[in-house]
Length: 175
Image 1: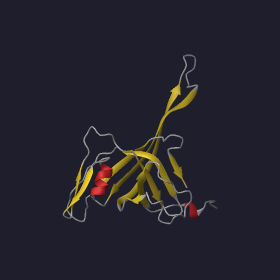
Image 2: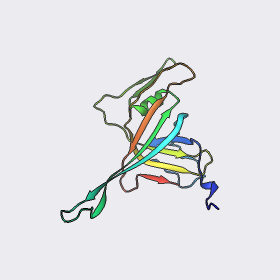
Image 3: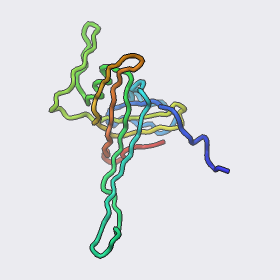
Image 4: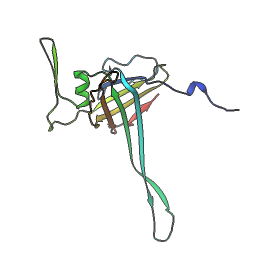
C-alpha cells in the first residue's frame, strides 16, 4: 500500500508578485503580502521555477575514476509569460524604462541600453494558500517575444528572471 500524503500534492498556477529589493517578506502562509508587493496579473500557463546545478569531476593521474565531484555553479530562474500586456508589465520585461500618462493615454519607453537593469524581488503563492516562495533578488534576462496571432491566441509578455544571491541571505525562501 502506498505511503504518501495527498495533501502534499500541489497543482495550479498560483499568483505572482513583484516588489522592490528590501521589501518586507512574508513569514507565514496567512498574512497578506506587504504593501510593496504588487500582483503581476494573469499568466499564460503559470510559472516555472528552475534550479540548475553544475558539477565537475576532480581527477588525478593515478586513478581512472574521479576522486571527488565538486559543485561549480548553481542558478535559480523563474519563468512565466504574463497575459496582461500593460505599460507596467512592459517596464518589468525591459528592466526599467519610462511610463507616462497624458490625456488618458499611457505610454512606455524602454530604458537606454546604457542603463543598468534594476533587480527586483519576486513572490509566488499557491491558489490554496498552502505554499509561498520568495526570490530575494532577480533580474529579467529573457527575450521579450510578443507574438500577435489570430484569436483565441493572445499576446503575452514572456519573462525569465535569473536570481542572484543577496547580501546576508539565501537566494530564495520556500514556505
